[in-house]
Image 1 (cartoon, protein in one colour):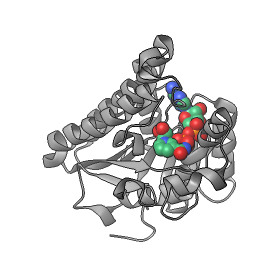
Image 2 (cartoon, rainbow, N blue to C red):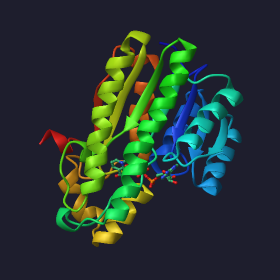
Image 3 (cartoon, helix red, strand yellow):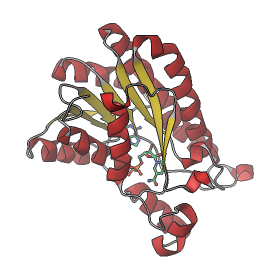
Length: 256
Ligand SMILES: NC(=O)c1ccc[n+]([C@@H]2O[C@H](COP(=O)([O-])OP(=O)(O)OC[C@H]3O[C@@H](n4cnc5c(N)ncnc54)[C@H](O)[C@@H]3O)[C@@H](O)[C@H]2O)c1
């Protein structure tokens, strides 16, 4: 293990234009990784990239819709063309959860959410694995799941299905790639204070004071950087004997 933790490594973070992806990209840059900011929100993605580059880090932006295979392949090529290789990937981009009971789910939104949160994450992992296999010096992939990958939430059938799927496919990829020293893990955040969570609170008319104690033994929402710190550990050689697992960063929500 060396300090700074990601010195010499190249990392892709999807969904890095805001929320946890932004916090992860910024923390990885502080840990001296060269970071590819991958997002379909070009304006915000470029702003994050500029902020990293103007504070002594190294980042480059690529526009991608992770639900489209050709765009994901271009994202990997961009990382390799720009920074020479790929060592770490955080597959974080996802759509806001659905909001209807199982008997009434919106079929169009089901298809859209599954195409991003499940298929899009699988596509990213597929082409990241191919690149890491070709390089032959290992790697670390982190797929962002959720407490919804372990616990049912009412009115979130598509999101719960997708996030359970992320946990399963992480284990498959870890089994297949362990002999190549490519580690594949997931992080399952609890309630983290991001634009996605604020949108859900507004939708259901909830406040942090009323809602946080139901979701957190610490009686507060988590901060995006607290998830980024978990991904940093999994990305770095400090977690060199960890693969195929999920790190629960949820203030004990799933421990009850
Ligand atoms: N916020 C929470 O409380 C919470 C809890 C558990 C899990 N999560 C998960 O953590 C991750 C990050 O969540 P967040 O709250 O920071 O989300 P967010 O909505 O704040 O940010 C998501 C980012 O992903 C990008 N994105 C969405 N679809 C994309 C696509 N098809 N291609 C490329 N980029 C795309 C968006 O532009 C945005 O920048 C997600 O996987 C989410 O499901 C969030």
